Length: 268
Image 1 (cartoon, rainbow, N blue to C red):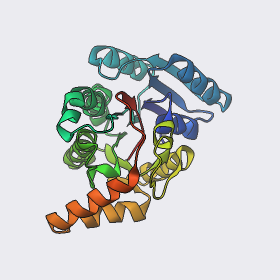
Image 2 (image 1 turned 135 degrees about the horizontal axis):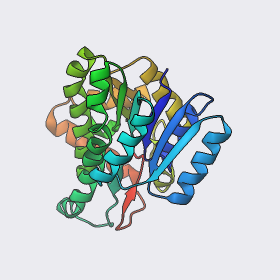
Image 3 (image 1 turned 135 degrees about the vertical axis):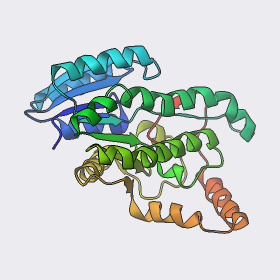
Image 4 (image 1 turned 90 degrees about the horizontal axis):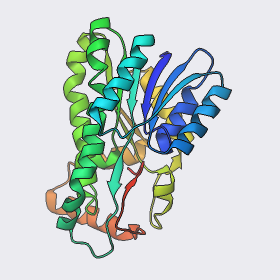
């Protein structure tokens, strides 16, 4: 079991739940988030469970600041697990056309892909030299069933699955396990704003337990719930015209509440 763990996006949602899931006596956590009050609250709760906690209020897009904090934490004692869970999605205005989502694509890719790279790049070479460690990239089931009204978000999450599966064989050879974590609907403030279907929704705490179980087994893809995951993989095998009708019909039932902001989320 890992005992020095880095978690990004730790001030809310799945990242927060993971911090509290792993917190225990003998565990050292490095928690990264952007909301100081919420990050401090998570840290205090983790400490109450016996964990040692270091926190950093950082934007994961800041590669230099991320590297400095992560390397300093590793200098104290080797990090053996990195969970990159920080992520955002662009929540578009009702009536937006698909191409308008692209205007917000840079922020989404900078956080969801660039931020993940910034979290693992400083530590991955050290893990490989030590021939031990785990890396988890938090993606989404949307990587396998791209959402018509969240094209950029879905693409950024698909990139994480591709990245994890691409580097996994080389890293495994060097003793480092790499996993793509692909949750479905998780009960977070962002998902709670959806008024439509949320099949298989679970709490952030349930999601954290499933992620931990998958990491303990060093699985390549940790996807849940299985019914939603299998459905997402099945639709990939449908003829294109049928797949498009299915996705549009499902999206029509969602009827999400929309705004013009780019928001943090653990949406699938």
